[in-house]
Length: 138
Image (cartoon, rainbow, N blue to C red; front, side):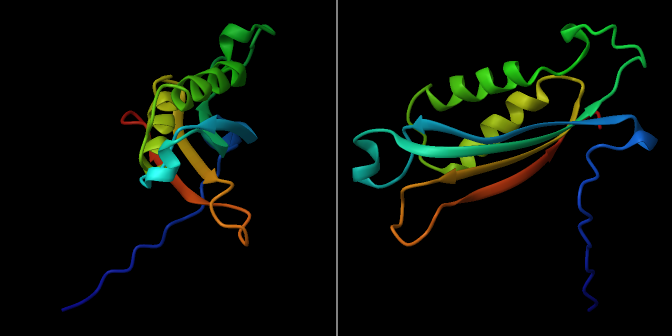
């Protein structure tokens, strides 16, 4: 029996060859009701969200119009809505919901989402998960 090794290549997000733009959000810290333990259900915890989106570029002329780009303000508003929409047990679930929201814009080819809980262990800055999801049309 042979074992196949699949090499995962790092995502080249901004890439002129594939007409891809990199839209990102860094260190967005929000309150979120998250966790499986009883004490985690008593109130919100701080989570940090980082996003990297590979976005299809449209026409070369953006016409300096926000309607022609994936707007990070819209993305942040979507993350805020998700984190405030009720309790979620797992950081993995939260990351998946955020990725799906980002991929809801047809121009987003790839969404890389990192979600960190900031106040779990006194001797760790954070714990969490990072996922990468592709558009079905990518």
